[in-house]
Image 1 (cartoon, rainbow, N blue to C red):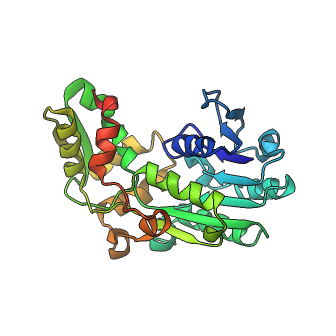
Image 2: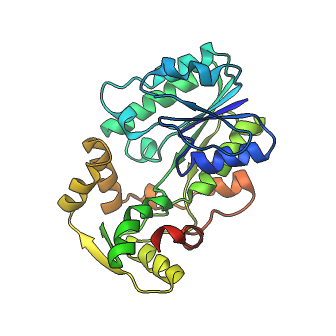
Image 3: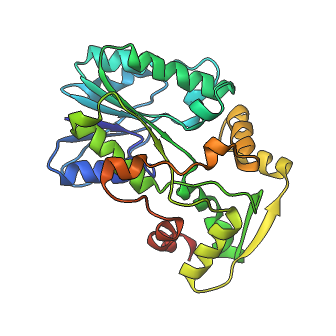
Length: 279
């Protein structure tokens, strides 16, 4: 049995579905009650309280570990989740980490995530670590304003990074959970192209078949908005990457294609599949 945390999110949802369709027994974990695919058991648990995972982990052999923003905050102890998994008999953990662990290792949230990576490496369990860059699905932040006013606002409109489709992250995660060949690997996951926020909005407009105006936010405006949904330190780290990506953060990684045998999906593909959110 495989346990998927964050099972209702942009990565967890397609991962849960893919594992179930492959015939595996799956337990989907989320903080709140939610519908699950046919044949999938759903368990409500709060990762801030690792003991609440015990019912989900009973009988599990593998765990996909995805942390919400608050578990990156100072004082959080996500490494306890790995200990809980080991005590429950889990043999393999696939951790969704962050590209910033390597590219910006000294930010507070990156230090915390690196410590979690190290805890997993030293746990005695089989492991794989996924380090994605920016998510294509972050464009869903624009959904309401596009639906209501045909406008999308973001900072650094003409600064691009190679955003990754969450569906590709989910496919790589499934491979790591199911195939021994991927054990002990660290996978940097990016999209196939550097794309700016303005170009992302153009791709959404093309999929909609109607114009969408782009509005460039200031750094402070963007930080105020982001602070409403994530810790301030994580917001600042994210803005630093978006505003001034390093050469390493602009690099197109080959790891998706190496793992899956096909190139990562471009942003336009994600926009077309998710266009209903913007109508």
